[in-house]
Structures are given as structure tokens and as C-alpha cells.
Length: 161
Image (cartoon, rainbow, N blue to C red; front, top):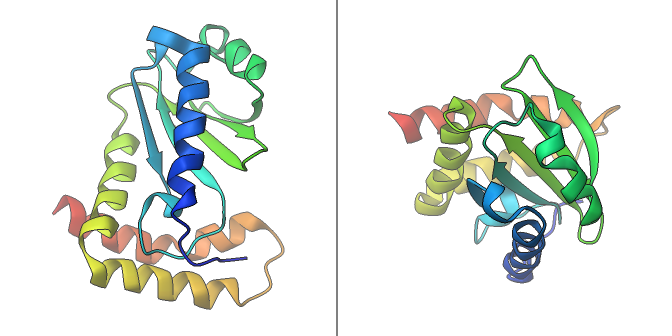
């Protein structure tokens, strides 16, 4: 499932960014390409993770209908975890993570991405872990994600330290 980094992924993000901005206009507080496809040189699944910050992620009526109209569908609602929402896009494969401003998860996600971009040793450690885990058979995709948590948290600590 992992592929070598593809420079086309940045273009895929740019297309999605334009679509989201057109759908939401001034309701976009922040929009960032995050996840493995946002890190040059890092092998990844061809899945574009996008961080969207809106004024209030719990106020779905303010942004979900417009995003549905742009081709996304609401996939996950996590009220107990920062009012996180995930919308899914299919061409390309997109996970659109929605949060409100001042959520500490924003800092963590961006610090992780920026650390991987700037520190080859952390990028290599993370890729090595991903490759080892990808070689296994997982009952659920979430099990694979959970198995990466230890190395991710270690890198985030270095980034925030």
C-alpha cells in the first residue's frame, strides 16, 4: 500500500484546497496539507490528509452542507475528542479533518509534519516504522494507525520540546 513519495501529491492537495476554499469562502480559518503525503521524501499511502479549521467544528450546519455540495461526505463525528469531524473525498482519496481554533491537536499535527520535513532522521525512523507495520496483516485500518502511535508521539515530543 505504501508508495514512494510522489510530487503529484502536492498538486492533488492544491486542487482540494481550491475546492474547499470555493465551497466555504471566509469560513476557512486555516487549511493545511498534513499527513505523510505532505512530507517530501516520505513513502505514503496515496491519501491526502487535510487539516481544516473552521470557527466552530461542532456547528456542522455552517460548513458540512457546503462541503457535501463540493463532493465530500461526513464520515466521522467525534464530539468527545475536540469536536473533531472527518469528511471523505474520493478522487483523489482525501481525509478532511475539521477542528475549531485553539485546539491543541492542531499544534501537534503541524509540529509532527514540520518536524518530519525538517529532520531526515525522524522522517527515516517514521518511514521505517510504517514499512514494518505495513508488512503485517491488520484486521482494521485503525489497528495499523494505533501501532504507529509510539513513534509518532516520540517525534511530536521532540518537535514540541
